[in-house]
Length: 65
Image (cartoon, rainbow, N blue to C red):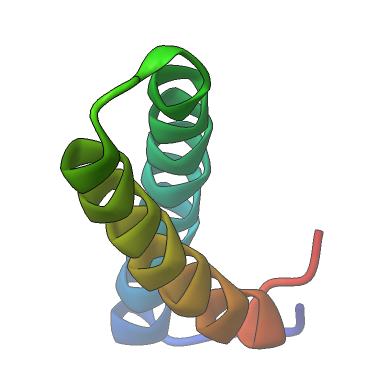
């Protein structure tokens, strides 16, 4: 990444932090999903994983792995 303004740096750092939070959250929910037996709870967890993954995919366009 080339030179950036202070404002751009703040936004970039926020995206980096958000990316990490989403990655950790998706991993945590995936672990919970492995042991959850209640079908309605599994569906809820899968929905949240999907939402997190969609957000993560958008961030990865700006900040690739």
